[in-house]
Length: 188
Image (tube, rainbow, N blue to C red; front, top):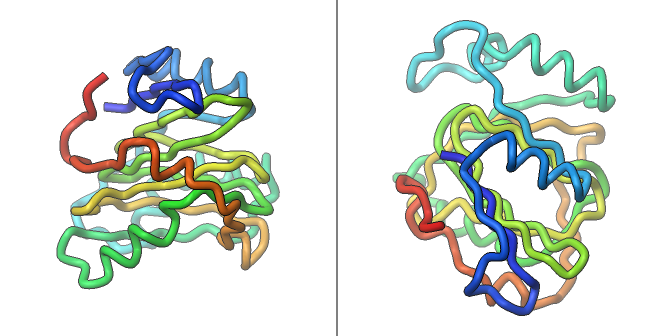
């Protein structure tokens, strides 16, 4: 279940806002320029489907958002709990960073936790199957896939190096909860 919690940047223990309602989540995130949508596949996708099948199942939405945003590259990334590089993959974006283009991810399956640091607030967005999140370029954030990661996501890029993270050096990400149980919703 998708979830948004908003905290003051200096209080990682008490959310000022929490919702599991996708419409409320989209409305709150739009206030900071973040796009949040829910998509449905155009045809069924079997577990373990090839990337080409995944892209075909979401073709209409992929074409729409690519045309709207000038994306030139779309791919599928997948990680499972048995991945021998899961710890390194998790650690890669756990610290606050930003990108020089929008970070757009659609969760075909599984889940992950995007945490955005904007205007003195921290927006913790648990993305699950059927969620699209588009974090504007320059927005400081971090991403946590949890200790037992499991997700399949479609990624969108304008430039080949659009995924490069520029780290701020701040320790704020270490002060907020990690995504410890991706298979279960986090407590509100």
